[in-house]
Amino acid sequence: MSQAPGMRRADKQLGAQDAIDVMAAAYCGRLATVSDEGEPYICPLLFLWRDGRVWFHTSAAHGHLARNLAHGRRACFEVDEAGETFAYGRFLCDTGLAYRSVIVFGPVEVVESREEKAAFFDAFMARYHRESGPQRPDGFYPQLGAVTVYAMSPDRITGKQTILPAAQDRWPALDRTRTPHAQPPGPAS
Image (cartoon, rainbow, N blue to C red; front, top):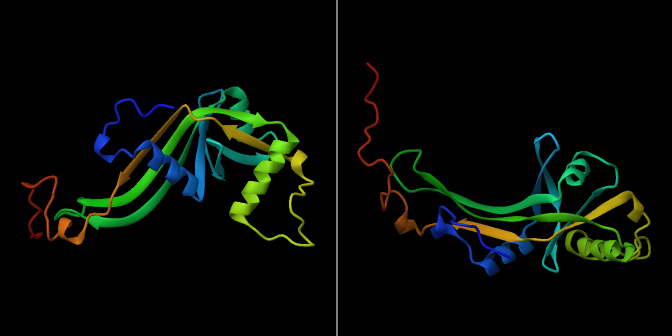
């Protein structure tokens, strides 16, 4: 697995393990694919980071996402966690966002094995909705044939972050205005 070639903001780059930790903890993500006509498509999904891969599922119906993946297996998957916005300078445009985000690039494959699909749903339900009992038995998925499970194998993972600056490093205590010589317009006459 490689890091981003020449990330423009290398000062914001997350380390490899930090990027994986963000992936594993994220609640949902977005999968981006491209159609055979070059039309981009992005789909929000609940997912698992499991065995070094991104796992997700959809209906077995051959919809937009399935058509795009049939056309081309390569995709990217993004997760993020937004923090607070903060002022760093004296103009409204001098505002930033504390965040962490990760993008995974790689091929997506259909998981065919009923055992692997059931193992995915065991982990998926344990993560998102743990409510079993006599009315909801563990490990029983009679609709496995009605869903498609996918696994994305990363060949590249990139992560970025902006850390919320301490109060003394934000406006008005510290002025990091990007256009220090700009003058706001005077009052209208």
